[in-house]
Image (cartoon, rainbow, N blue to C red; front, side):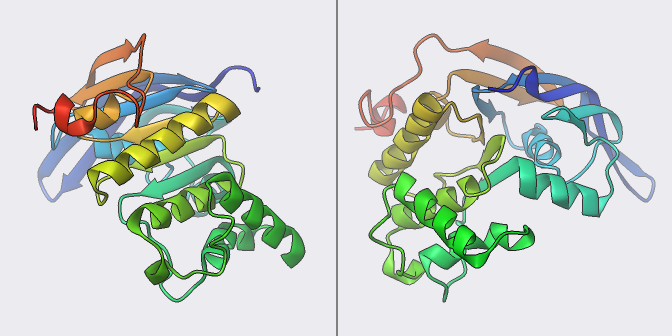
Length: 249
């Protein structure tokens, strides 16, 4: 495992300006994430957690402050350089899956490798291994319409992993899934974290989902209000289901 933090943000400020209106979305955020961390970022709507996610994912850059990603200073990169960093250092999992509808699971997973100089055979082999890793080795030729919601999210996770990223960044990854499928996906994250040492950063507004992480960062009013290590994370699919944790039946 690499030395030093995989994410190191120091005094990050993000300011949006629209005419004469100035909005301070992030106000001096300092965050350090080590290799192998499983981190959940939570907070109320408008707290700044989505802005923080965009900066971590190199989808935007800070107004000021320093951001080192796997030892690379990405604070001041232009759009092309940020795109390169995203493709090589970060795997993304989104709430809406973002799969190509008429394309097989295998071809969907291959897509991030199209920007790399490797043979079609190597791309295919890596995509197959990635799908097997998430339990979809028998669904290589299926299109998204032939897969359940949970299977589609597994394809999206396989696509995120195929580039061997330093960080898996998951944005509300269970938002479109039912309770039982949510538990399956969270159990998969925990397995990848436990068995492969994968660094996971997950943005969620659901306390029961965040409870599966080993560290919880709460963002409020553009600042980190709380940063807590969790001694005993909830075991997805084993401990109390979300309905029980949230006071449901």
